[in-house]
Image (cartoon, rainbow, N blue to C red; front, side):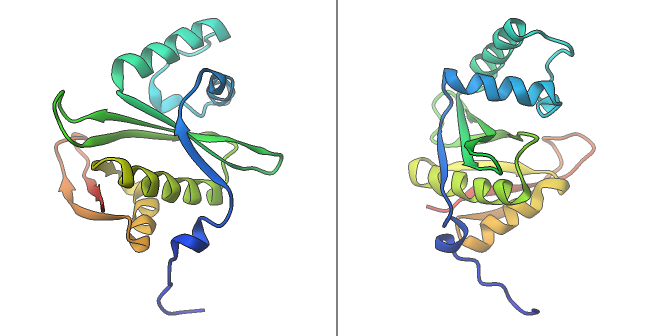
Length: 173
């Protein structure tokens, strides 16, 4: 089938997807993701045991970010967390949030990632203004969100990630 695709929020979000602030009970999923290499981009030391990971994870979230959300979706086995989204206020008195990172757990399917990305940005745009950056490998998910009308691309930056360009997006109210 060729031609223009009509992206509709109702259709994309037809399956159950939940986005909520991270809770202590989600640590077991973060631990499982860490053990399988899913949180390598967060810079944790290798070969941490469970108590050491708990301390490192909590410290990373509390000291480097102002907000953390869990994205839950239906996997092959059950409804469970499939990713974590991190955000920080631009400045202490800023009125917008910068999405500083999204980590998808190894068991998240491409469908989980797409639906989770759309669900997260659709939810957050109703709560606060935000901005985010996407490297070339991650731009497609953001472009799909743009096709749904929940965000727009506002430019390109070469400053945030030295030696690389990143697309800059913002939420649509």
